[in-house]
Length: 154
Image (cartoon, rainbow, N blue to C red; front, side, top):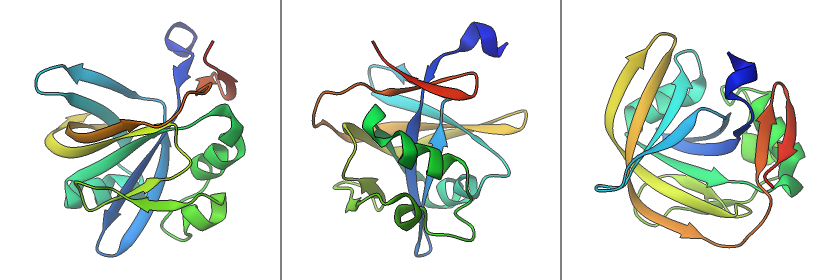
């Protein structure tokens, strides 16, 4: 299946619950509605971010440029259960405006989302979030995951 569905844009999703902030790298995500504006992310049940999002009911989608490939890889290859991914990846934490959740200052843009639905789908949960605030801060080539490696948008 991956050969047919790749490449996919890789994003960093930030979350917070009970004083713990985290970042997860995801390639399974999509806009799902114009009105209301809804965005879906798919998170594995075993991932630390899964529980943070499930409990806090918010998440922030951060669109990263290829210049931050190393940082995205660092966030996608370690667990936030035992480390601070902001520190590990060298990313700057900002605060979302409409939700209690961090965002990444280096991002090209972001979507602040409140969870309106969560659907179990096999070993993942599809979290559907209503976009309550967004900003496109700058242009840049975004990161695509292509069967295990990274490339860029055209």
